[in-house]
Image 1 (spheres, rainbow, N blue to C red):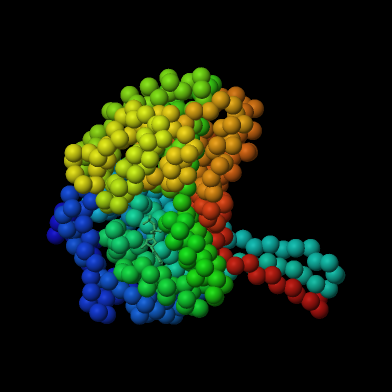
Image 2: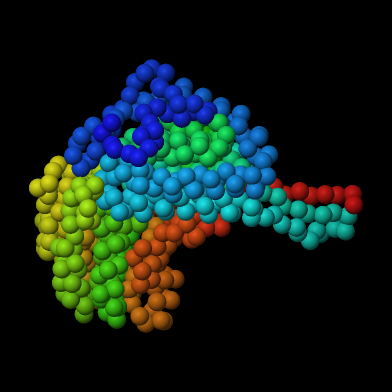
Length: 485
Ligand code: ADP
């Protein structure tokens, strides 16, 4: 194979349905390649509606026994899965970098991050508490219990090929649900490797299946099938809206983690070195391809030139390269469409008056590489102010007052993550409260952790992943009224 692994059995070119490794009914496959080199990695089955239905039926058949296990029994199995993920961290990271492109250090980090959700929800499984409520009449008692929502379906993106799966599958399984996952076609091998380890951990057949193939056919069946009680999705707002519409016909619950347009605000009293460090991680992690990436850097007038100079110095030192080469900080983008979008944003911005401080062009390393870019004098009429760029392009906007910064920051239909740097404690509270976002980093550029609730407001979606809140997305509340006492 094109990937060298300590345990070659982690690389599977078949799907995992009802505890068995299988090909598509039609025998069709999808080729997967390495975005850094264009080299072929392998093929995965091109499945559709029929195989999806089979996986859903298996999930339904497995539901009773899985739900009937004690929380502790489910926790022990999840814990085992967590340990296997960490024991195979290096192989999983190599698979991820090869199919996704991110630097190996970031892939190792993502595997640890992905595993942390499994560990966390193994623990939370045991803490699904109900309520007793004082009744309005003496002969009654009121109790609230929590139960798993049932069979779930998940559709996940390519930018975090492992973590976006575990933060859906782990809480679902902890709650007693079963789940069918469709990973992105660009990064299926990471998903299938997670299944290999889930199987070894003893997750029973049918409880967790994974199918690759046609997004519209698999998504169509997942959303139309009445057995599926919940759809959880991470991806673009455009596809999220479509899936919500499709789910309406059978009134499924949905959790939607959609696009962002994160502001990164630097006030004039900020620690500029800290702000530069925060901006580097918030903007350039995964080459700018995360939904919480800083999309618009807003800097107050008095520190604008100083910030841009320091930021440019730091960004010019970032090493671009193949993610498997040591020292690489910026890998390739996922495909040529992603590079074309970066080019469009830069050319639109420069036409409207932005100054290229750094980059602004493709990288000589190859088709999917783009030079880390800083645009100064960016203005709100530029497309990059409105659209998530998902690329290593950082536009820097100028503002004068706190009110203006908040207005600019909130001037978007998105509401996922926001960041700001400043020291004045009164302003810190005012700004934190006024930002219309689900997550706010204050003097911090890296906010994702399994212990905190990840999610957005407005058109960035609904539901929360991780933390004590994350398991609630997979639980129904049932109210019991006991009379005649
Ligand atoms: P991105 O721009 O990050 O690729 P998408 O929303 O297009 O975001 O993709 C996220 C996930 O949604 C992927 O697994 C993709 O295959 C899937 N997807 C894309 N189109 C559809 C669709 N019509 N129905 C269901 N899933 C889809």
